[in-house]
Structures are given as C-alpha cells and as structure tokens.
View 1: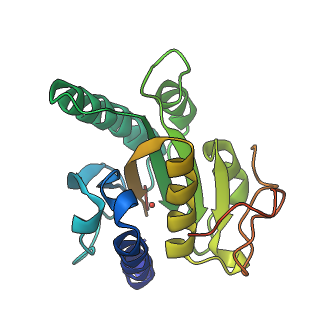
View 2: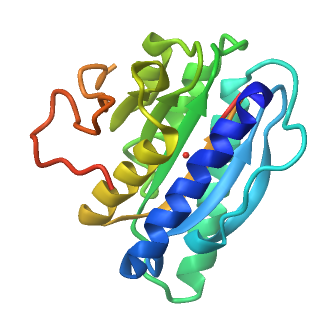
Length: 210
C-alpha cells in the first residue's frame, strides 16, 4: 500500500474538504485510522473528522493479515464505544471503510471477520470495501457487507469515502474506523461518474489498507 500513499492522502484531503463544507455532518462524525500488514496498529485514534491528518512516511510493511486487523478493529470499536458512552454521548452504528491493494496472506481471516460483523454484537460496524490498484474484487465482495468500490473502475477513494459517510449519516451511522492495508454488493459499485450502479439513482456521492 506504500505505493499508493499519494492516492490515499489525496482521498483524505477530498474527504476533509467535503466534511468541511457540511459542518453539521462534521459535528456528528469521528474518524479512527488503522494500518496493517503483518501486524495492525492504530495510526490515528478516534478524533473529529476535521482533524483527520494525512499519512506520513512508510506504512506497515510485510504481508496482508486480514484476520489480525479485523480483531484489532473489533477491540478498537468496543473500546471507543465504551468511552463515548461513558461520556454520555449518543453512539450510533460504526462504519468501517476498508481499503486494500492486495489479497489476504492469512488463511484464517474469515473467523475474525465473522466476529467483527456478528449480529449478536451490538456495535458491529457496517463495512465498506474499497479496492485500490490490483485488489481482488471477489475477496472485497466478501468483506464489503454494505458496499464495494473499485478504484480500477475509475472511482476515487475520496469520492467513495464521502459517499459512504453521507449515506451512513442519512441512515444514522456515525463512527468511522478507516482501515488501510498493504459478496454481496459486487453489483453495487460506484461508477466513474459518481453514480451507484445497481442502486437507485438518488444514491448520493457526497476509508483498512495493505
């Protein structure tokens, strides 16, 4: 994913600009950035969307262990939700924007992903998958429980992230856990012109990476 750092930062700038233009959305949305390769880590802890910073320097290197990042995501979401709830803040369903430029290098990731999206777990997130470079669309289709975007189709990451947050805001999803690394919904991808294919025309276009 280090080969795509400029594209990732361009997407973050586009997203920040869109949020800045919609201050009511900015007041409701917080963002956490997680990076992963062999070992995942929280790059930017949960913060207001307008404070989202660009990625600097080399990111995580090595393989793309999806299972470990899904486990970290569940732990991070659980901790963030507990902290916000303890502060008497209303917490709605989180959103994970999962970005990958490759395929998983671990074979047991499915179990960790099932725990992340377990319907019995109250703060389970909606998951948006974004493929950058030569990412595997079949794998992303299994991960994107809400929607899948493919950069190879001409979709900008910033546009996909902004559209996902705008849609989530309309349906009361508020916390974003953006993952950067190394199904269903393959029929619902954002086209290069910003329209959502396979979805109603009134769907609007308003981020884990390997």
